[in-house]
Image (cartoon, rainbow, N blue to C red; front, side, top):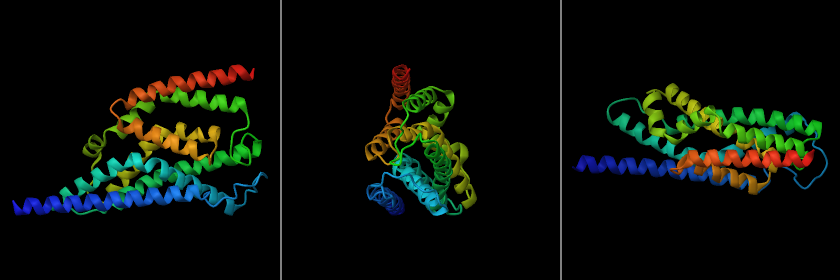
Length: 253
């Protein structure tokens, strides 16, 4: 009995450490965004895309992804830490939870690279203003339609299913060494991106640095992945985006 109580205390301690670390990372990410992500957002002049500015934009997107997506990924990371502890108790090699989390960061970095490339292209064509807000009604309507359609696709549902069932994912994809943990984090992070990438693309519609849009999308992603009726919320949002996009395009012509 004493051994069981001790093990339970250790598991609770490990869980507390992981939760504290996740909260700290999310808080720092949001603080960075609230501070303007290192950008001079007061200027209305087009940005000069130097290599340094491109790197700054990449890190802005990456930190924004961490701030928006980490809360919804937290249940999986905490579950991994718990299962990993149980594995160590049965004699299997211990893997730091941070290795698993790095897989998520790598997946989100991949999305950020695509996003900053699109941002560069949209700014060059004038579709995106110097304040990183969409300037074209047709562009906005097409974005809304695309996001709405994606919400109703089987790919979206498959990715969302993996995000909503962390235990099932670990059972089917568990690897015992550090390389396996990194791979699991990368694969689940890819599902995380696949679930939400079109929603993140709506930042080009509402404003890349619009904190209301960032917070709203972050909350929606969290609800979509965690509440019991999250898949129905996804479908309803898809329909709403389709109606919104169609209305915008109708007014534009």
